[in-house]
Image (cartoon, rainbow, N blue to C red; front, side, top):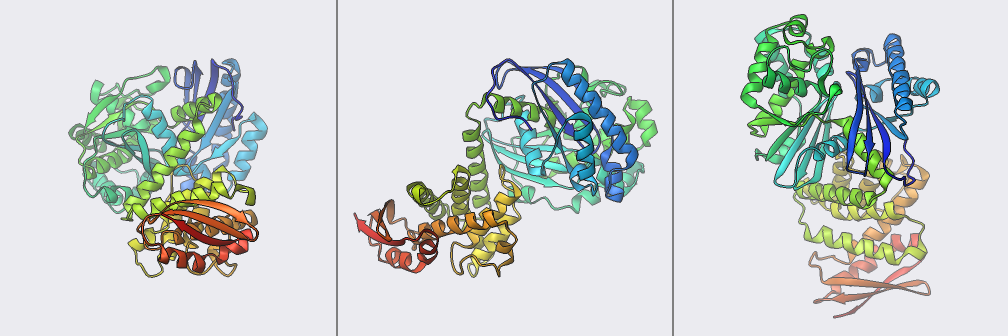
Length: 525
């Protein structure tokens, strides 16, 4: 992992993508966090996913091949004077039962630490790379990255990443499911398998068209090259982006379908010969293309824009931003809040009440700093829980706090780890009714420190929610002052707040238990 210490530019960074179908290295020199030149690219066809998706383990011969690739990557980084590097591992490594041994051997033999990232982080990094090559400032764009083991979707609106989604539907995994066949029957099997998969993000678009459908990954790049240059010019056995940087190109849906039909008529060996494809590309190009065809059809896109950038480019840009420390945390916080608000809108929650409660909650959090040991990250989790605490009404108003927990815990939010997402879900779950208790599995399975955070944040959220009991935002602002064993809440109001005053008395028990202070509401207009 890179150091967080700010470094002077120019600086040389390396990014590694440990994928299911291949291992990739990119080395770049950055003049600033956004200005850079690629010095070298390297792709090694080590298919980690082949054995993992069949047996659940990385095969010994595959592991040895991967170690050889990492030793080569280490030499290339040293030769290029790389200062910072990061290697991200995706679905195949995540799912391998022997991943711990794999990570240990890579580290002990090369000094490279593999960072196991979830699909949502993969989508964020891909989107980061795309935004460096394409303007996404207008309209709604959808980025689809198809790898060997999974596919990631990122919805971008006016330059901001709103929603990300990951699916265990990649080219290698799909090939394992349907078999390495050919012809129209092969295409039909692929399409039926893809159509049977659930894509909640696509469902949420409700048939709306997107301004741009952007495709990343080696297979869509090969298809775009075939479309532009014809057989024998797909980037083939030697190059693709490894030999230079390419400009984005459009691939029409009609042309994509024609290419899939032509490729499907041949077996993998024939595709490799006729179209000058690498063997490890020739067998998976049709399954990958079928995924792009499906998403293009669902979104009514006429074309797929191929920017010739991907996960490894996003890793590089993320490294450079960290090296420069140029407002990175503020930007990431903004993106995470945007993603949370997109989830709030997706589940039809009236935005006025949750936004008001979230604002009151962070105001209380800030004013209570002398009384708690919570940090900036906890403040963010509290704000997100405030935004999402009502979404359980999408299922039913009865028990909506429990429904909120289930929705949040199953909805990845850009920028949150799995533990942080669980904390947010629990805080939202405890905004009403029973307080946190070890008899509740969702609370008991947390670490001791996480349980402490949940109790404190839930206590603040319950109080903030009580201050808008009738959802009419009658309490405009709060000033909190400690007075003995009481917390005096001086409220600036508009209208009668009798219900809110009663609610503070009803919901203040957890707050008193956690902070040793009894909240008392005092009002003035």
